[in-house]
Image (cartoon, rainbow, N blue to C red; front, side, top):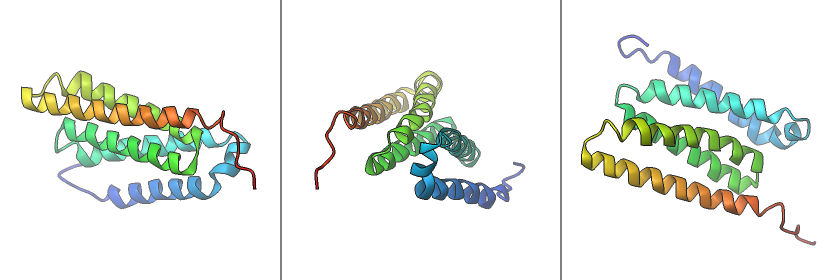
Length: 146
């Protein structure tokens, strides 16, 4: 990435989109054969690196925000699909982004930005925790009888 060269952006977006299309349409089938975890890991790694490269010139806080938004979007998508494996995999991205926001960004920010950073990170963690608590009850629920 030299001098604002964004030639990598279409390739990165295309690769990330193709991974998520594969996960969306073949995820359940791959989950049965234990091939789902590495694919989710690759998608998350590609997204984290892509968002870093896309937002690093804006500032460290924007990088953390992009990672938090991505992790929350994945957890929300997993919630709509009722996919516990996907939701748990996004917790690694969420934890990494929250640690970075709390330990690095909040420490180097002015007071007002620090307060906003802490509030937004807390809200993201609370909302994700709420969804994860709901997701954890899926195993104990009885399936609907036709």
